[in-house]
Image (tube, rainbow, N blue to C red):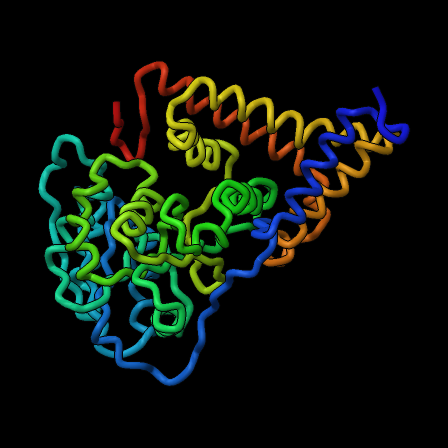
Amino acid sequence: MEVLGLSWPAVAVTAVWLAILLVPWQPWRNREVLEAEPGAPEDLSDVTVLIPARDEAAVIGTTLAALAEQGENLQVVVVDDASSDGTGDIARNFAGLEITVVQSQPLQEGWSGKLWALEQGRRQVKTPLTLLLDADIQLRPGLIAAIRRQRREKNVAFLSLMASLRMENFWEKLLLPAFVYFFKLLYPFALANSSSRRFAAAAGGCILVDTRLLAEIGGFDAIRGALIDDCALAHAVKKAGYRTWMGLSRGVVSLRRQERLADVWNMVARTAFTQLRYSVALLFLCTGLMTVLFWLPLLGLFGDLGYAFAFAGMTLSFVPTLGFYGLSLFWALFLPLTAGLYLAMTWSSALRYWRGERSRWKGRVYR
């Protein structure tokens, strides 16, 4: 069966990519962006930065140094989560910030390590605002002031920013822009930022939240076992009746190095099957969609006009992400390969789960 001389599969795939490009929320675009605003130091006495840290000696000094440049009277709580590399000592001896170092108690049953650390640190926060910050995140000068202003202007109690990942070597350039791209397709920012309670998402590396709100939802105990804790926290906030906002930023910089394919593979496989709710049906649906949407358009390179339109739509949807991070648009041509690798990582995550390993992170295995 053909439509205007084109095979119906080609028409169907092209129609899907056209729909992705034209839906009102347009997840491929970069409309939700917040950058640092360098200027005169502001009084940040209403903010406490809460950092869970487990074996982060290589980066914690850089993270703290960036916080020291944010403004005046900033409070910092670092929770040393059973580090074996002196992370806690580096934080205790850091000059230029008012830092409280909390030595984490043994991990409680039913908790993920990060959330248990955050809950202990939350109890030390006395300021109206809490900034949840991963230990490997460097903030550009003026970022906290900018995110605080954005909170007021958007009238939200919860605001998160997607970190700019390190994209320097081959594997990072091939895979990490697509990490952001797929996240935006899965969790369209415009929908996450809407008033609908049915759709919530967040980027966990940098979250500003009202301290009273954390207490109102029951602290991190409300999501104690969550592995995708950022989205789980956003769901809890929206369930309580509050608005959230999420955006991209080049002022939130990840210091994590992903130099090998295995580094990215393990990062994705840690939670990919969790994202699919451990559902075999969703795994096969994901496999079918990824194959159809990202591999069939390759036929367009061999002269099939219908698939050529699909290939054009696919690559066009990836261009804004590459441009945002200053990468060559050449990488868009490799999107089918990248999608295939991410699909393999998802299956790897499922196989680990079926072998009894729900997730693994820094020596901790969740069964």
